[in-house]
Amino acid sequence: MLYHSTNHISSKVDFKEATIKGQAPDKGLYFPETIPQLQKNFIDNIDKYSKEEIAFNVIQPYVGNVIPKNELERIVTETINFDFPLVKVEENIFSLELFHGPTLAFKDVGARFMSRCLGYFVKNQNKKITVLVATSGDTGGAVANGFYNVDGVDVVILYPTGKVSSVQELQLTTLGKNITALEVDGTFDDCQHLVKQAFADEELNKKLFLTSANSINVARWLPQQFYYFFAYQQWHDKNDLPVISVPSGNFGNICAGILAHLSGLPVQHFIAACNVNDVVHEYLKTENYIPKQSVATLSNAMDVGDPSNFVRILELFDHEFNSLKNVISSYSISDEETRSVVKEVYLNTNYLLDPHGAVGYLALKKYLRQHPHLQGIFLETAHPVKFYDIVEPIIQQPVPMPGAIKDLLKKKKQSIKMEFNYDAFKDYLLAK
Ligand SMILES: *Cc1c(COP(=O)(O)O)cnc(C)c1O
Image (cartoon, rainbow, N blue to C red; front, side, top):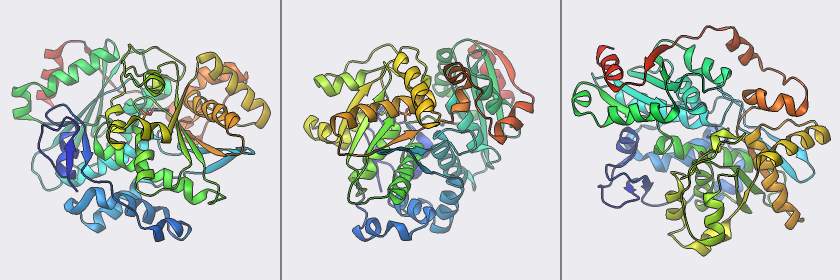
């Protein structure tokens, strides 16, 4: 399988190079040359396959021959070594819980897969690879955990001091070994700025082999298809297909779902569930794509004003607005609606939504009101405990802590404090 850049200037690369490079040199995103078609037999008999076999079948065509079969089987098995339950919430609404991984958010899947692929690619090189990542919260934890103990890879995470939640901070700062957390006296944008400057620094790049674990990386994007197949496997009525609602920010997750659908996964319809950051929602109404400044909301992992994967959505539909509209609908949900739906669903069903899942739930609910004969699934992208400071006041009850979080809260944070100053950052990297 080869990947072209969505800007069509850079040359085509294989999966290994796309993973190592992250972004194409012409600043486009890598996109598969063709969309593999799964055998009808595989879809019809999905009940007979293990989740490891499903994941392997789905990803193998994208990886091609750059990772041997036994290694790819190991990588896939390690990537998905937790549960992906489909839980009934109401008569026609189901929650696909993607928060049973180590950092309690769906980003674990992409981060675990990418880290293991990169670990395989650097195995026989004598140079260590250094992954730089700036985080506003969730990405850093998933990446740190995914790369923990991966030989040949050092990870440096930059996060803005005082601006991530306590659970998120502990997830970044308590691993040690090959993971280092830099606590930057600045904002998320400052962290991102330092990372970008490091990638552009020729002197630094001569001495260190730097790469990014950014969410546009194909090795983070493509494995997100897995759990759409796991949902279908658990779906109770294969003659009455589910509408799937995806809480969306950078649109990588929904884009993976649509890719799965175009390669043969049966799905009724997709819903892009957005908070008030609504550029894609507006695009679907007007056919005009106008990036905006992002606005802070309760579902902060979806506060994106110019989603980086939007161009992949266009590419999936060959830039045909009408075919896109046939497959995707969208809703924009306010914080007020988010709060009241968390409360209402908890009171009525005893199911506790996190703010991101709540946006997904309500978007689905609105769609089903207009299509009452259909049923649907929303993706629950994070465990509510990650956002206990938001959720507890709404339901006026403590959120039960999973054991892993109780253990985490006992650990001691270890970070290196740093001014927002490129020279200090560069000196740190060179001295490592
Ligand atoms: C990152 C994230 C999202 C948004 O996913 P995209 O792939 O960027 O659209 C939604 N919910 C949670 C909890 C997240 O961490």
